[in-house]
Image (cartoon, rainbow, N blue to C red; front, side):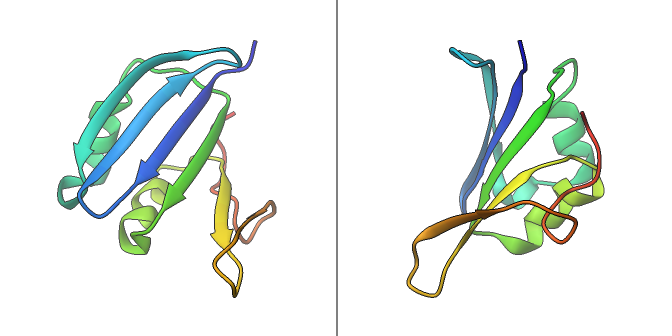
Length: 97
């Protein structure tokens, strides 16, 4: 059964959750101003996942997850503010799976 890393990156806090197809397995919260390579590596320690879903309103901090080399489905908004998803090299964070 595949497992998922769910990331909700907001202005105040970044919520990380580990889930499978049926339920949340574990979750952690990191203050967004503290998001760095080392803080996220610590938060994800011992978590194994196949896919990443990232939602973010903080582009500068989103780059931290790219530098970690996580593959993701990245949600974006269209010109009206409605969500749309995109796959591909431009939006894909290279390799965890």
